[in-house]
Image 1 (spheres, rainbow, N blue to C red):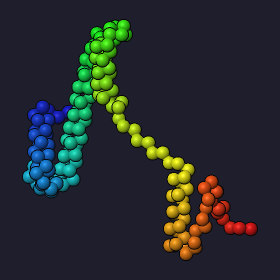
Image 2: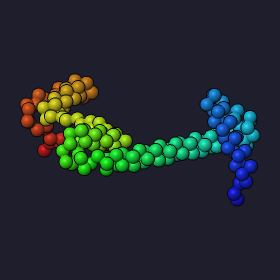
Image 3: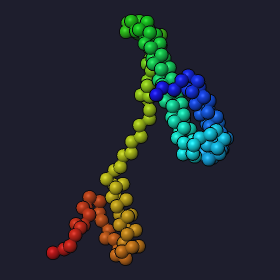
Image 4: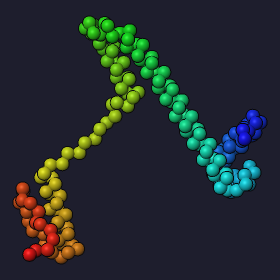
Length: 158
């Protein structure tokens, strides 16, 4: 059953009050008692739904704004592109600024972190861990290894 406009308005007002109370530090029990929810759980669910709706609406608004900005950049790029293609230095500079702005809006310039490990670094780490294991838990001294030497085979001998 669809709620009437008056019911929808009353629900929105109650949710707004519930969120304000939660922001101010009220417990869900206090919110339920103050605003007439049937239980603490009902107050919690209502506050969570209201917050989720707000986040979704804000996300949609941001996405709509981003699309508007991208459309504006498209128009600017179309107007400058022929001159940039012809080699006009100012037009090229302007086009690059437009492209840079588009990349930022789309998150294309996000930093990518790469970690490069060398064989020597891996061997050093393995030796350090073997030494720790040998000196500590097992009581067995770790055998020194030379660079490029394969680790000893695991499992029973024989």
